[in-house]
Image (cartoon, each protein chain N blue to C red):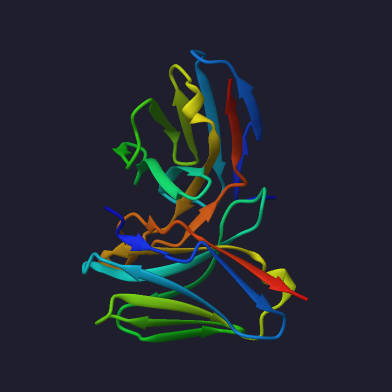
Length: 111
Length: 113
């Protein structure tokens, strides 16, 4: 079984809709992250959490929110989706040493 | 302001030859560096790392070199194989890796048979 799972894997939604992307991990790590990948822009950090009670904004948090429901679960919400949020979204988890383990990604299309 | 830069968006090499991927960083607080490999439709996977107390780390066909004075690191793949074709991301962190990672934009490597 995969260490980091993401649901859904693909999603098409309309402008203005609220959408939630979910992430679960079985690594037992405290740290979790949400990234966005756009072509040619690499991985941009949206939000991260170093433990259940800790939430931090990343480079591009505007238009997004997160919830850390448990050590193993970290969800990302788009309150009102817009077309320029069309991208690949990755969840990751890490131990304090820093090596991150990524999920398979969610391809989100906002029309 | 990009703290981690991969100036070559793409690289093409012949099978069996050496692939050299480069990465530059600007933040002198970075002391832990990682390379990730990403295939299409998959998440990035960890490849190799290096701490700033070293200048070289090897793992099989993969070697990472760190030049702290130049704020430059490179990943060498020898010999290159078609299965190495992927996007490679350089990442850096401060405080021995305990701070969040900062990623470069990636270099797409194509190894031709």
